Image (tube, rainbow, N blue to C red; front, side, top):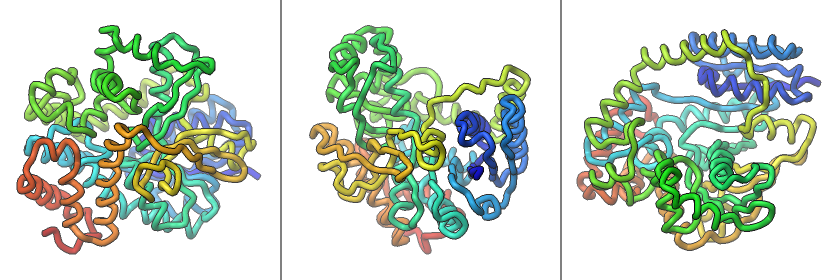
Length: 444
């Protein structure tokens, strides 16, 4: 029987394009139904044209549906993927504008810290509505979440729903490939064990043909041309002893070491993506988040792609491989997923969301026990995990005070602001998001 895979937030056209290409590349899914869901009809139309083109180029017997009605799309689904953004460009800009105005020079603002927490608080009501629909219309489906902030959203879904859900991020395999390139190792000769938090997991082992490759990585990092590529992460590696996932532009805001002073921002930053401090960073973001510019970029990218050579080669994102393992050809697949920590990482908080190895097979998703992290890694992970736990509690209880406390202990925020300054910043962020936070009856 042919399978049905639903893409919620399909208007993320480039991401949807790549994931659909991967799904259809597996023989078990050549004749599947791809159901695209988005509330933006223009983006949805682009997504459908994109999938139609892939089906045509691959001569696949697959079908594609496009709808703004999520419940209709979910009926009978075997797999669901989520790439939504709640609040649009305006909310995303306020996430970074307000902290930067207070001196908290966030870089991306989609995962943790004051920006990530408020992104979570306005996203989680919608993500839980999706979970309720999955419970009703396709309770056996595998739900793969790509929406940030990954840790807090997965933690909430896994504790407050019965959905079979995990969260995926490309930073684990992406960083592993980057390190392999630096040391000249073919990727098929590399093995690794990676665990921690989303965007802050660590390569506890990294081996080339079974031999520890960390000495080679250290040798590579000492080369100026390689050091400059990832200054923040390379500094963390040189001082903490293990390499961390996700980019420097993300990791710069997850700790207190790189953006609490203007001289540090200048030293460890780089041009582009709002690395600069204060007004310069805000101006870059103001232009980046302008809705008309985003729409123009999306259309230009679509036109370039659809008029060019259509690449049908399978990519490295985990989603299609997981679907194939569970309800396709049942080829077992190991990946790093986001799950609650019940006896998986011994020295991180019980029940928090961790990113660890997971094995997908026809039996479902099986987690792998990691053990204890090196203490210098566990400390940083634990601080961030406990802030995330407190933000989740704030959502579940509707207590805005817990939001304030979660932001109080964020590593970068606490390195820059006093408690009273943090309170004022959090109050301002509540006001900016008040129409999107139904779980809170009051903000003070």
